[in-house]
Length: 92
Image 1 (cartoon, one colour):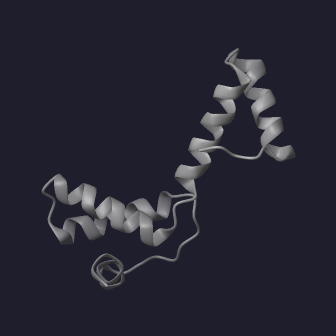
Image 2 (cartoon, one colour):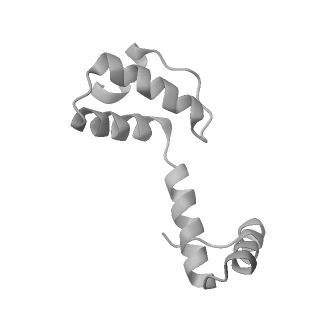
């Protein structure tokens, strides 16, 4: 992911460059990748994690509990979602 470095991000990349000795281009890409990961919205996160947890052969009741726990820890601000709301996101 290529990002435009605003002043805050430029400052972050400057700090990382000073403390890690890694090349600036690599650091900018890394910051972009991290921010891109955390830009994922609640619906996309729920769908992605549901599919990943199904691959692990977890049952939906266990998945709904797991997703509720994970949502509370994510960077995005989201109200607590009930199992019914999670099912609606996944299955429409």
